[in-house]
Amino acid sequence: MIDISVSNLVKEYEVGKKVLDGLSFQVDSGERVGLLGPNGCGKTTLLRILTGAIGYDEGDVVLAPGKRVGLISQIPVYPAGYTVEDVLESAFAPLHEMEAEMAQLAERMGEGNDPALLRRYDQLSAAFQTGGGYETETNKNKVCSGLQIGPAMREQLFDALSGGEKTRVNLGRLILEDTDILLLDEPTNHLDLRATEWLEEYLDKFKGTVLAVSHDRWFLDKVVRRVIEIQGGRAEFYSGNYSFFVEERERRYEEKLRQYEKEQAKIEQLEKAAEQLRTWAYSGMDKTFKRAKSMERRIERMRTVDKPQRERVMQARFGEREFRGDEVLTVKGLAKSYGDRKLFDGVDLEVIGGERIALIGDNGTGKSTLVKILLGEETADAGKLRMGPTVKIGYLPQQFQFSHPERSVLDTMLYELDCSAQTARNRLGAFKFRGEDVFKPVSALSGGEQSRLRLCMLMDEKINLLILDEPTNHLDIQSREWIEEAVEEYEGNLLFVSHDRYFIDRFASRIWLLEDGHIVDFRGTYQQFQAARERQKLAQAAPAVKEEPKKEKPRRPGGTKELEKQVNAAERAVAKAEERMYDLGLEIEQAASDYLKLQELYEQREALEEEILKLYGTWEALSAQLEEAGG
Image 1 (cartoon, rainbow, N blue to C red):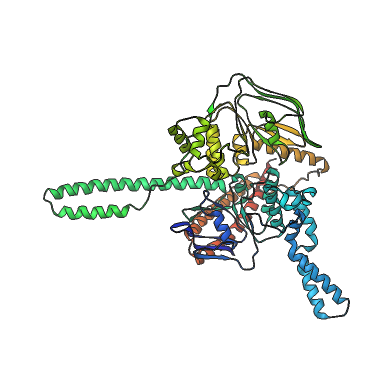
Image 2: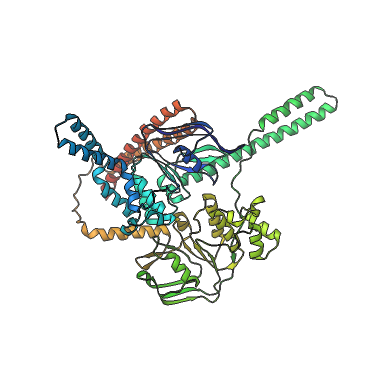
């Protein structure tokens, strides 16, 4: 069944400037789809159109009738005086209305025996139970626990919360509403790692449809199974998660480039032939003139493919200062509290040259405070801190203020770096500030653009210890990838605070987890850290589980050779089915505008998915038997 159908959608904010230009796609019930594209391509506009918040100029938008749609984007305005608890309770408004009517009916039924009242009460009672009316408190507590909305926070006024806290509460309310179609616009922007992982687990069990706009690539890999990329107002389709999308997009680019180069080679060959025919025509061979004109028209008809373009890589890197000696940083017995609230205590750390460290932990544990102590911006309550004598720090804070926000981007560079206008323009151009952009006042820049400008200025400094506090916040995927390229080029020490697991996984060779007032110091990559934590959880749970004595299973007739044949046959069957699934995905992309054909193909895909599950089940069972027989 189709939950979302968009056909030839056009949306124009300014005359002649179409954000969406003939966009067509559909999302089936239960699908997890990622909506990608650069900032400004129309992703949020599309989500607002789907919810009916704004209109559109042309095309058709159809949502499955009777399906409830929920959007996490802008934070709704609630009545003055609403607490967090009130906001969460608003998710159960229909159930509360049913409950109130049931109470009235019960009171009236006590006054007399009216069959109509009894029938209505029975209907409401069944609907109340089916809708989870008796589990509202349990469900609310589960969601609050997962999103770290504690008892104290639930008593606070909603208007008094920070933007990140409001986002968390609103996400919790949307989940409690139990919608059928979830539209997510940057859902992880204000979530820490634990809350993000909880959301991923929730979406994994969610039976409805998900359409997500996100710059969190790890989240996209975990959640989505199909990608729609908006390019030039139209849709490009990819049958896989974010990692598949990256590889497939590169493959398509290379294929288009090969087609373009092949066409250009053919055109060049024909142009030479046409030029030769014209030469002969001028020599008195009149018939060849017509042939030359015909060939030139053919050449023009062949000029159909534009040279494929890819996002230009920004040519920029951090300035680096020569580092002498191994000692970078030594911390002993560091402690910090605010009133009765202890952030951390007894922190002992030592950093040597070349290390790349990710400082992670839940929001509010004191990560940014620790960084500020290391920078000398705050004072510790106890402990000692020593920096190596040749250490020069470069720092990008999570939030920063420009001293003169009224200045233009260009003037800011000129005043702050004391460089020539040409040097400033070259550096800004490398950071994608081009043309009229350099004359914008800094105050008019978005959060991501301000981060980019701050980095542009920072990279001019000679540093050997780079400290980044949430460097990828508010940046789209292209900007994140660029920052990663710049950090990749940097060879000095790196210490960064981040919830971006993709960034952490790429750069960290050591993990500092700030938890319960202490730092867990793990030497290894993020994936190794996760694996170690998982093993620790299993080890802690192990004593409570009594191991059952293994029972000898009867050996299968025919021995291991027969089993090996059957396992190999099962593997071939799975491979063939997966190949059919891939071909079917291509057919679905090609039939994007043929709804009848699409419906038929989607039914085939559903049947094939069930077949693949069965084949995998057979293969796993046979593999397990082979392992036992071999053991």
